[in-house]
Image 1 (spheres, rainbow, N blue to C red):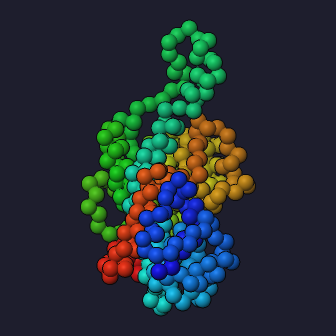
Image 2: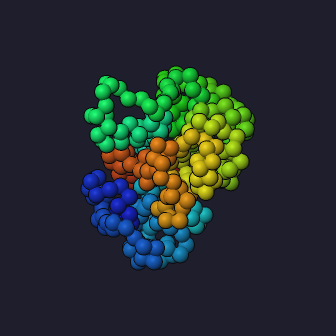
Image 3: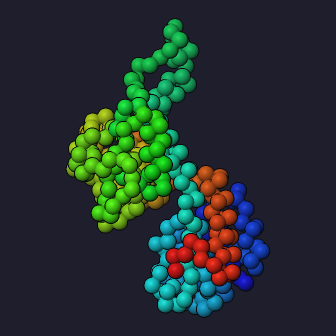
Amino acid sequence: MNIVILERSSVGDDVSVDLLNRFGEVTVYNTTPVHMIGERIKDADIVIANKSPLNEETLRDASNVRLICEFATGYDNIDLSYCKKRGIGVRNVKGYSTDAVVQHTFGLCLYIFEKLNYYDNYVKSGAYARQDSFSHYDMNFSELSSKTWGIIGMGAIGSKVADIASAFGCNVVRYSLSDKPSDSTYKALPFDEFLHECDIISIHCPLNDNTRGLFDYSAFSKMKRDAILINVARGGIVVDADLYRALNENLIYGAGLDVTSTEPMTEDNPLSNYKDSNRLIITPHMAWASNEARARVVEETALNIEAFLDGRDRNVIL
């Protein structure tokens, strides 16, 4: 059994992939340029990928491939119709980063909400050591309790954020992009009312035709002037240029982002020119990447392969 890992770097060098060796001969590539995919997988029985495109062009000469495993939940890099025609199985890893992303959601929120950048800089500048009073609180902050926290996307991550926000004493509401009935106990609001009512909005939904560009200048203009937006979902849901404009025009107070419209973030992205870290924090799409989550990806992939070889269904996409 020949197993090829195309993007070892996607789980980090500190996470071992040795448990995959029990299934056969494993060939590991740290990264794989698109033009080299076909050559590297031509003798593979199982391909493990993350972002590498696996389609008719790259799979054409890989006649032995029986299974593609994603080191991820998303699988939009795979041409499912072609794989179905070829009889190639596709498996992903679900829920591996829920706790990490939920944790990061509150990290981003509290960084801005409690003005932590300002207070950290105040102490490290020496100003605190020079003052007479025991305390300094010139930049006002509020309590989360009694604030309205709005959630878009009530999947595993959004639901857990809702429960934790409730534990903080927040009034949690949601905006649903689906007409399907929901068993959520949290109140659903129309979009304009949702924007108008929320003090914090966190985004946890997929990027699709309904969500692309959802947060544009028009949306920001309907939000509270002291509102905070958190996006740990997909960058394309927020129009970066419109967020930059909204911050400059004080349409909202702040934003915490783990995703941007292009990744890596381009140098000409207007948000790279917004330097007030009291109001904007951007992290490089790392919310998912806790030590535990990355190790879990490999462990779950091994279980997916084991189930496939045993003829059992597990995390089946195809």
